[in-house]
Image (cartoon, rainbow, N blue to C red; front, top):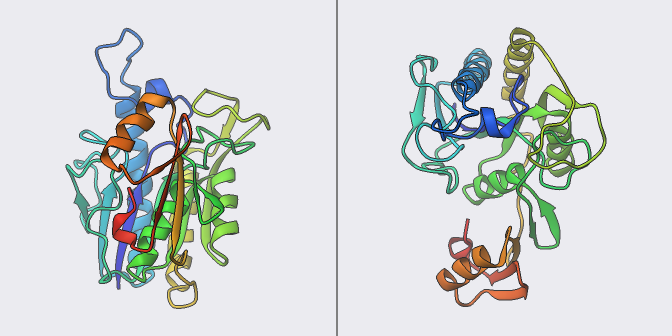
Length: 267
């Protein structure tokens, strides 16, 4: 069985500060090597998921570093020897994912923007009237190839989001916010599992997820597709509108894309 893994860093145990643990600008005065630490944490959580998947019957595993361009969030020196890694593909979607895969895993994911109790939550779209974040978008892309998303690890809010969107999905919770306020990428009080315990839970959940292949349905949205995409400012919306002149401007920062073709969506 062939498994595709999407990796991110904000949902990993021990990661709570976006500026110091998730950004690449090492020239800043505040940089103290915590990005390197977070990349190590993320790689070890990926390895735990790989081990669980292999124990559950996986025969080939390919991971995509979904946290932007190089160096991303995966340290290939620490990568599990049975896992292949998609590199240099940026963060424009699960590159290389196609119908040859039996299932999608998502490791280190976070809840969508504006989620109460979310840790480092961000990213939010509306697709056919349903609000989705990166978990839902990755699942939707996989569904286009008839690939079901069967496993997500991350903070508690991310796991709840995944379970609401994909009934029966296996989740591994490695941390949770101690406050209900929506803070986006700001640092908030968070309780995290130890790194060892988080990996134990991820491995066990990944192994259990393999048993659900065939019973969990792909995360489908049927055409016509109506995608609303809010941007951080009007300039970003302007730039995207230039690339997609047929998009409808809902307000100064939001574009709406309407199409019957999955390939025409800006994802």
